[in-house]
Image (cartoon, rainbow, N blue to C red; front, top):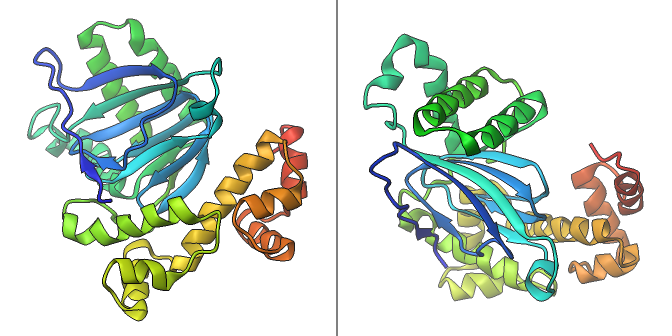
Length: 291
C-alpha cells in the first residue's frame, strides 16, 4: 500500500487551515500532503507511524510534520471495538511554505523560521516548555479572528525556530515526493503492521515485492535506516507498551501477544529500546514517573 496524496480543501478567505477534529477514532490511512502539518493530539492514545518512526502517542502529543512525509495515527484497539469511550480529538494546522507570500521567508528576520521548515522533512516532536506554549496558543486560536490567527501562527513558528526542545523523529528525508522511492517500503511496513503478532519472515515480503532477500534487505535499510528485523521489533515493542499501560495482562502474556516467542527475548529487546525491563516500565507508568 503506497501512501495516498491528500488534497486539502482550499479556503479562499484564509492562507492556511486551522481545524479541530472530534471523532470516534482517527482515520487509518497512510497518507501525505504538500502542506506542513502542526498536529496536536488533544485527547487520544495509540501508535503513530511517521516515515520510518513507530512510537506511542497520548494526550498532548505535538509534532510538526513536513510536506510529503507519509504518516498516520492509529488508535488503540478499544477505540474501534467498544462504544461509550473517550473520543479521539485533535487540533491541527496545515500551511504551505509560501502562505505568508512567496518571498516572505527570504527576509533576514525569517532566517530561523526558514531553517526550521527545512528541518521538517525529518519531522519534529515538540517537548518541554515550548510544547506548553504552543498548545496554549492552539487553544487560544479557537476564538480568534482570521487576522489574529495569522499572527498566532507566525508567533508559533518563531517560538519553534528559537526552541531547543525539538526532537528529530526521522533518520532521513522520508518524503513521498517520488512514489517510486517509497512504494515498496510502504508495502513492507503495511505487511509488518498486519503480521507483527505472529512469526514474520523477510523472505515472505521479499517474494511479494518480487525481490531477492538480499536486495530487499538492502532496499529496506536504505529507506528506513533500520533492518527489517529491527523495524519489526520496534513495532512489537510499541504494541507491548500499549498493553502494559492498559494493565490488563501479565508481562509474559504481553510478550506473546506482541509477537515475541519467549520472555527473555522480549525483555532483552524492551530493555534495549527503553532502558528498563517491562515490569519496571509498568511500575513507573502506574506511579506516573515515566519520563
